[in-house]
Length: 261
Ligand SMILES: [Zn+2]
Image (cartoon, rainbow, N blue to C red; front, side, top):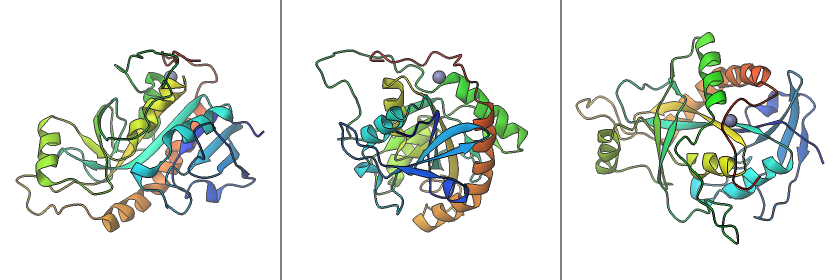
């Protein structure tokens, strides 16, 4: 089977521009991933792309088979994953167009298959630092060099969706000091850790969730608005990803490891 070293979860916008893409259908013990994986070479590195919502964006966040997506990456030999996503801002200083390299998540999803440890192995892995420190540093450095406004820390609260938040829900998240809101970061990032794969998220801020208190001119998020800002961001994101791929050290210098592998 085709092998890859680096994995990227993202939209089809990235690999549609690459030459010599090999599509690979991967079967996993957890069912089918969101789509075929597209393997291509960038800067001499083998990279596997998987659109987490499927190629035709047919899978809403709560219907994504996260375990199959992560397992498929592992099957191909991937040891590092970059997982960019569109996200809302919960704080005034985190503005649409900014990128956030989050360092913590809060899980407010339910009913998702969010572990590979369903028995007979019983273990309790530390989630104190759920994101890869080495890939986070690299993402921040590359973003700064490219003139992107990047926030070096941030907490993402992951909601179940597919609906957006009520004002009361959003107020709670903002008051807790959390910066970013999204529907897919959990369990995607965490499942990577369970497999011992390094994972970094880059949150592309598209909107202010339900608006901002004290700022009546800021309107609640709409799906169209999210898509527009996300598309505007695509080129900046692609440049950032290519720079990161080139610079990911061949040998890990981080603490990411699994109890399983
Ligand atoms: Zn790591």
